[in-house]
Length: 350
Image 1 (cartoon, rainbow, N blue to C red):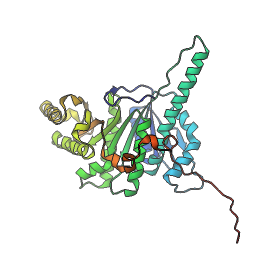
Image 2: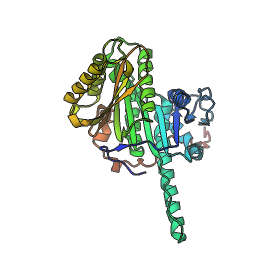
Image 3: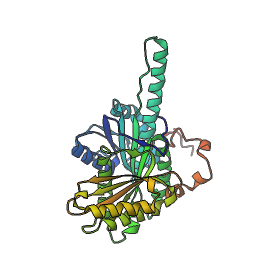
Image 4: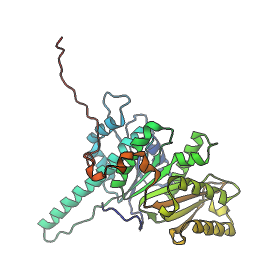
C-alpha cells in the first residue's frame, strides 16, 4: 500500500471490514458493526472475549496464562495466515485497538504489518502473472488500512513506552491513523472517573467511525479530540475539544480539521455559525475542511474535532530513543521484536 500524503483527503472504499483487536477493540467493533450492519472480525488472545458471534482468530498462547506483549506477538506469528484470510476480499479494513491494553499493544502493529506485507506479495504475484500472459492485466489488490487507537493515561508508566513504539509502527503500515488520548481528556476533566472517561472516549470513537461512511477523512496521523457533553452550550463542548487537542500538539501543526457536532438537530443556526467562525479564527481559515452534523446523543450536544497533524506530537516523547536513532538504523524494524520460546536441554552436572 502506498503511503498517502497527510495533506490529502480520502474516501472509504467498500466492502469495509471492522477488525477489533483485544478486549476493548472487540467490544467496540461488535457494537459498531451491529449498528451499521457491516462486516466484522475479531483478533484476540482471550478465550472469554466478547466476539458477538463474528469470525474470530484466537491467538494460542499455549501454556502461558499471562504472557508478555513480546511473547504474545511471537505467538501471533502462527496466526498470520488466518489473519490474511479474515481481510481477504475487503477494500477497507478499520482496525480498532487499545494501546494501553497488552493485546492491542502487541497485536495491532502485527496485524497492520501482516496486511501490508500480504498486499505486497499479492501485487508482485499479479505483476508476474501479467507479464507471462499477453492478454492479462494487473489487478489492484490494495486495501486501505485505517487504524483507530487509544493511548494510555500518563500514570500508566509501564505502558507509555510500549504504546509509543506500537504507534510508530502502526503509522508505518497504515494509510491513516486516528488517535484518541485518554490522558489528555482526563487532564481537562479531572472530576471524571476513569469509567466515565472510557465511556465518553469510546462513544467518540463510535461516532467518528460511523461518520466515516458519510464524509471524507484525513490520511496519515489524525488526533481525535473529545468534548464533554453539554446540555446547554455547544461552545462549552468545543472548548473541551480544543483543550484536548492542544494538550497533544500545537495549532501550527494542524493541517485540516473536521468538526463533528453530535446532536446537531438541537443547535440553533446562529450557534452553529458562531461555532464555525470561532474555530476558523483559531485555526487557519482554510484548515477547517468541513462541518459534519450528526443526529445522535439524545439530550445533549457534543463536539469532536478530527485534526490532521504533520509534525511531532507528545506521543513522540513516549519513545525517546526514536528522537536519537532513526528508523533506518533499527535492526528489528521490519521484523517486529518478539520473545521466542526456546527450550534447552541443559543437564545438571552436579
